[in-house]
Amino acid sequence: MAEEVLRQLREPARWEALRRHREILAAAAGGMFLFIGFLLERQELPAAAVACFLLAYSVGGYYKAKEGFLDLVEDHRLNAEILMVLAAVGAASIGYWEEGAILIFIFAVSGALETYTMQKSEKDLSALISMAPDTAVLLGDDGTQRAVPIDTVRPGDRVLVKPNERIPVDSRVLEGASSVDESALTGEAVPVEKHAGSSLFNGSMNGSGALTVEVVKRNEDSMFQKMISLVQQAKSERPETQRWIERIEGPYVITVLIGVTLMFVIPYGLLGWNFTDTFYRAMVLLVVASPCAIVASVMPAMLSAVSTGARSGVLLKGGIFMEQLSKADVIAFDKTGTITKGTPAVTDTYSSGTSPDWLAAAGAIEQQSNHPLAQAITTYCDSQHLAAYPLDQIEDMTGFGVKGYAGSTTWAVGSLSFMRHLGIPPLGEGWEEVKTGWQQAGKTVVCVAENEQFAGAFAIKDELRPGIREMIEELNNSGIETVMITGDQEATAQAVAEEAGVTTWSAESLPEQKVEEVRKLKERYRSVVMVGDGVNDAPALAKADIGIAMGSGTDVAVETADMVLMKNDLQKISLAVTLSRRMNRIIVQNLIFSVSVIALLITANFFQQLTLPLGVIGHEVSTILVILNGLRLLRAQG
Image 1 (cartoon, rainbow, N blue to C red):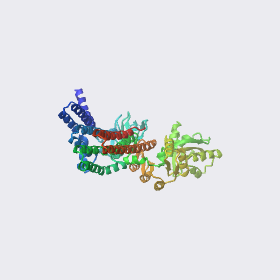
Image 2 (cartoon, rainbow, N blue to C red; image 1 turned 135 degrees about the horizontal axis):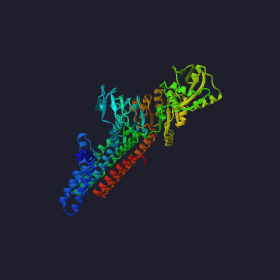
Image 3 (spheres, helix red, strand yellow; image 1 turned 120 degrees about the vertical axis):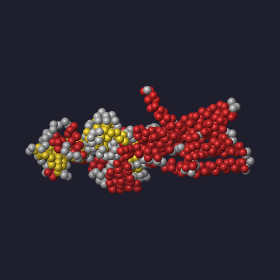
Image 4 (cartoon, rainbow, N blue to C red; image 1 turned 90 degrees about the horizontal axis):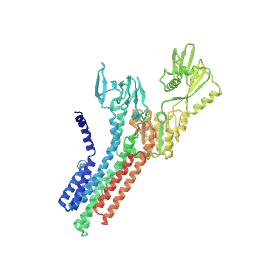
């Protein structure tokens, strides 16, 4: 019984595998009939040989012929498939059954290779889609559990996420604790601890703990679904080179048909050639002049590049952007959350030596605030494993800092201007040197005072993303200028720019000023790329020739951008640029090679030095070679 169940489960998978590989199977069957016909013809069994050649025609050529006639009937467009069918039928009509079958076989193999390229490019999308759950366990007000389709879940609903299951929705933890693997979305290999209040993302993998969560976004609005949409969109978009080839394919085919007609009429009617030789030469011209290799020069390469990018966490909204990326000669970066991590951290501390409790007091006071600088101080103080410091009261001094009261002791935590506002006396030359050094390094200074006496200070900095210096250096060395555009003050911008290694920077830029900076760059450079992650970056992303958003960025930034770094790894920009350059280089190679082969074969035919089998082999092998050349892009390097 168990074996029967397993057999039934495997059956659909087998049929799906057969359906996916049907073109290559048909080509192989056509090749088998061709070989049998070849043997029968050598055994002087012409009728049986012709029957096998007919099977080779019908089985091997079915899918390509169907594609060509559908284009002709539905889109009223002539294409290379029609030329191949006419050439094969023409060869058979004058008794060259074997040559026509060879043409169909090799043409079917090249078509199967093109289909393989498409399927290969879809593999990463299929893997991505398979990670998205179809259902969610909805919790009722009375505690009942009900599995429902994921698209019916709405914000505010409560959902149960069981241990070791994929999280079905973008949500917020209400109850429970667990470690969650978010590597598919963020690239972070270490699981993240989640507890009440933590955010969860659709597609990430829950650990060993059960979680009760509140839905915050509909399925179609989740980041994961947007990533899937990006890959689907990239598949359907065609680069400019491909669109140009498709525009000229119809007129080119008509030109070939006119040329074939003249090739028959003039020698036969005016030069006295016999019918069979003239028709034979016309059929050879029909084969060798077909633009199959030219048509196959772009899409396999583009799809392979898009597939490799998706596999590496680089999602593009269309092949046109993969094509254009190689033309970029300047890349502008936002600072916070792009060049830097976007999470400030304490880098240095300074103590006056007069207040042993200053760290504990500062940690206790800042624990009450959600300000990023306060969170940085709280995190640092927690890491020091200090004893809890009791506070009686907290007073927020808006725009300056915070005061805390513990018995008769008054603490103040805030900026340098807050200290001056309170009349805290400066410590002297030693502190001034430290403070100046911190400020020159682009660090924010937060001071602590006890009873209006300076107690200590924190230096806080939003640190650079790992690998950002190496990535920018690589871009600079490859001839691409790098620019940082930020809303921060000039001193901070200069310090971060110099640390990261960007060529130039622009500070104190509001969203509309970022757009103006991008406009100025477009006046100076051929193609401008903008990288950002926030709502305030969206207008600049739209203004640039290519906008790149961080995968963890805001919805507006992701929707506006042309390319998304799914795992927030800026080093993938270098990969994308290299991939784009390789793709364009391979496309140029393919076009030059395919045009040269066609010209050579046409010339040889005019001088009557080319037989139909050699013409078929030369033409179709060139098509296969350009497809295989494009498939090299499936490797990230090389």
